[in-house]
Image 1 (tube, one colour):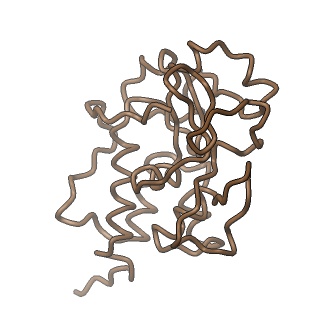
Image 2 (image 1 turned 90 degrees about the vertical axis):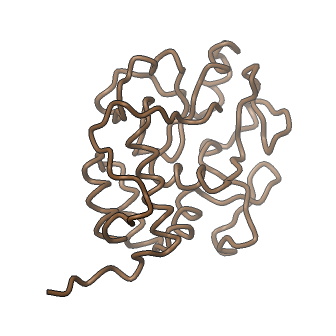
Length: 211
């Protein structure tokens, strides 16, 4: 009996999708599927033994609007870590440069330059600096820089239609088992060259990058 594989099976896009899934499955910090990128204090997630969906964790996410965020103490901002959904993880693993970052002292940066929390767009944390291969129709201007959303960048990197499979794969309601099933359905079985699935594992050590 011949098994029909999805068109994206064995492609670079499939390798990226599996790598992103593994990064989430092996993470010991918070995984926030319903936002592309958010911030939490490292101390608040140190107790997590495996990938923990935000709905299952009593953790405060840093608010993204300036009026709430700028009052946070610098030492709290310095300790925060990024929490990424599948789309954000794909962008992070493939060299994406985020518009908004936080330096080791807790100071906000826009495209690597000092900024004020008052300067931040309400979605600043989900934008990446645009690249030549990005869809020009999806590029916009924010804070004087050409940017693109994590959704649009990840859709390109994964070979997905922005309005179809991408919405399903990036859905905020996905749990880890949902992601595994959808990655397998979209990209076929895990390539032999990648590590076996670690669903449910609590021994991984890969952490989200320091903001």
